[in-house]
Image (cartoon, rainbow, N blue to C red; front, side):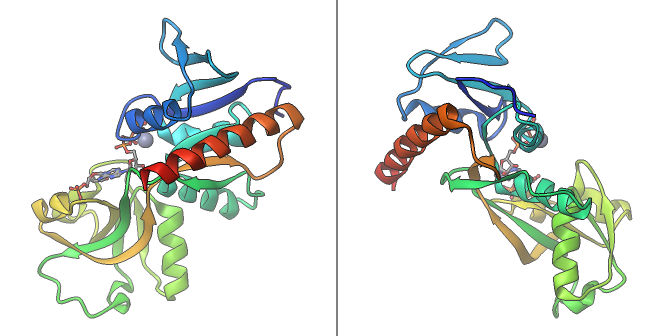
Length: 226
Ligand code: PRT
Ligand code: ZN
């Protein structure tokens, strides 16, 4: 479905936690852009590598559809959407190419502070609120636990207080949000950070060469940072 293009197109978050560090990392690879008036598209000047500024949740689908060649997105978003595709019986369409070292967080299971946590078997028959149903369901299956997954698109941390759920599965970085809601993290499902995502399949020759060039520069930039 990818139209033939001789430029590479990278999707990054328009605004949010990953927006600035993603641009800064690409700029440190020697890329520069001319922004369009609507600021959704940035035309690459030093190299034929353009940016599309979008919601992070749209990035895996844009790669799957061939609208974008690469993207910078949290491993949590990529993993969730990959799991969704698998559950729907579809082939993998994107994969993680590189870990980028920013946007670190973890997808954690958290329970009320009042629980005396003994282990995952305590979750049997419980309701767990999350925005990551595929990752949570996969983890529960691996643990051999039958629990109800309650899908919420936001404000997951207040679900136990509202009586919508017994526990939650959400992203945690400092842990302040959990403690503000009298919850405590008890299990880590996924260690996440921003990643460079690309298609599962190969590129055509021109875009393949551009992608290789970008990866070489990216690996250089990541080495300097660490
Ligand atoms: O608008 P758009 O859809 O693009 O943005 P978004 O609001 O969906 O995403 P955004 O910008 O909030 O997060 C983008 C990515 O940053 C996530 O997908 C993660 O990969 C990464 N990231 C890193 C985080 C966090 N840290 C994080 N702490 N994403 C969200 N949080 C939230 C978490 O959900 C919880 O509500 O912050 C709260 C917890 O933080 P602590 O510090 O209190 O533990
Ligand atoms: Zn989002």
